[in-house]
Amino acid sequence: MSEDCIFCAIIAGEITGRTVAETDDALAFLDANPLSPGHTLVVPKAHHTRVADMSAAESRAVFDLVHELAPRIEEAVDADAHTIAVNDGPEAGQEVPHAHVHVIPRFADDDGGPIHAVAGSPLELSDEELDEIAESIST
Ligand code: 5GP
Ligand code: ZN
Image (cartoon, rainbow, N blue to C red; front, side, top):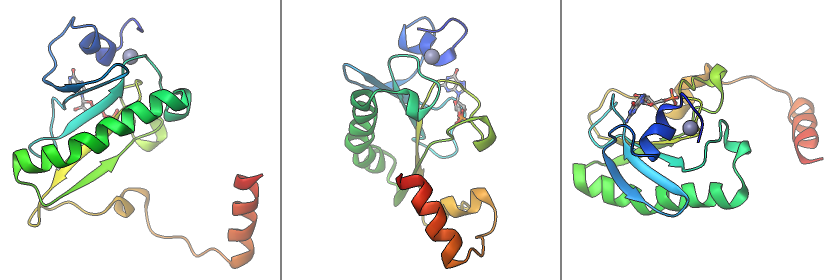
């Protein structure tokens, strides 16, 4: 647990969160400022800031809960789809420094866009540049 972390306080039961599911290593609760009805956050119970800070087992526990909850949320709020996303780091928009997956119900007539809308326009990269990037990630 980290002092001054709002999600750790929810996990510890010190402040109210509308918990919707819990496993040994992960907790899911409603976002206090939902982008749509049913907007849920799934977090590791241990305090980790970034996705890569979680152990592989914790990361599996978080995504297992996302996997279990998504159809339940969709049914509960009669959604058509979901955007499932992580703001992983402040430059990507992360405001709460406790890793979390947003599960955001989407509706055919909502005004939202695809995840592609959040990071600007697609780049025009050459095959060589793409090869170089793939090479540096894979080695
Ligand atoms: P981020 O921008 O870090 O990816 O998203 C943080 C999310 O946490 C926001 O959607 C925000 O509404 C939500 N949030 C912030 N404080 C609280 C809180 O005290 N309780 C709950 N349930 N959600 C919170
Ligand atoms: Zn925390």
